[in-house]
Image (cartoon, rainbow, N blue to C red):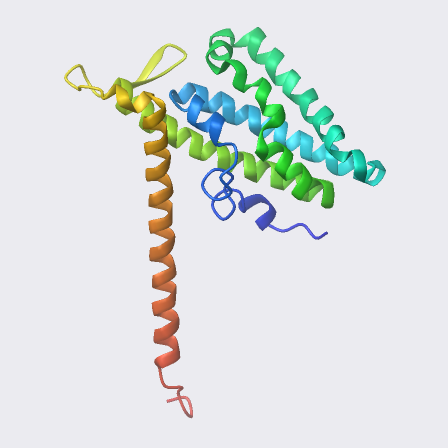
Amino acid sequence: MRVRLIDLTRGLVQENPLLRLMIGLCSALAVSVKVENTIFMGLAVIFVLTLSNIVISAIRPVTPDNIRIPIFLVVVSSFVTIVDLVLKAYFPEVYARLGVWIPLIVVNCIILGRAEAFAYRNGILASTLDGLGMGAGYTLVLIVMGIVRELLGTGSITMMGVTLISLGTGFQAPTFMITFPGAFLTFGLIMGALNKAQSALAERAARRATGSAGRPTPVGGV
């Protein structure tokens, strides 16, 4: 299959796993309470998704169709184990906060969904781009949610113990934002903003098309 730029970019907006495909929501809502969590979780998903896509695409000619799902799980769990051990060894505080969500990447619908829908049916390069794009789209939404929830819920954003942004001591942080209802509210607002932006772009394109169609065709170059 011919590799196209869309293989890399479709996951950012058009088929964003969170905002459009609505998969992987549980982990996104749970870990987006802190920006630091979202960065590590996003990188973990990009790593597992991309490398799983590569391996599954590479072995697809010799993968029996009737046992492909167990094979997918073995491949994915191997890379998840790598992520789990690295975080546990080098970033224990982050690992403790992410908790069960790292092992659960094995059954994350994004990972298995792309393995089944794309990597198992396409070449290695296209599958690599698909993994990177889908992972980047997931991570982008996750980070935006983390920024909104942590900043409004705590009044500041910290990374590795260093305060990057602070709204000051006078800010009364609504702790509602760092609860699960706050996660649903933040996610809904982001989805609504994207829908509004896409509707506005579609209306603008329609007006331009209508205007072009209504103009008289020049005759004789006049």
